[in-house]
Image (cartoon, rainbow, N blue to C red; front, side, top):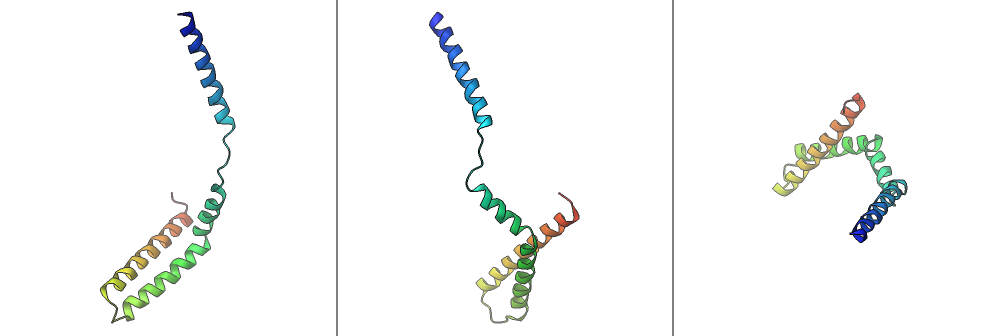
Length: 98
């Protein structure tokens, strides 16, 4: 019985020390910095300009591209929808809403 009690004490001590070390030694992962840079550039002026250009091109192709096949029309609709969502997201964040 004394062995089990000693074993539980050691195990609990190891768990406490390892949990404290893990909390202190939390390092930044190597891909966090590039992803943060990508997020910042996709939520700024680059995203607004890409959204406006994509909306203009896809809208123009849908309006004036009479001989487009169904697949191309659907792709243009997807691009148009994505650009509207991107611009809406930037608009909402510019207003300060969550």
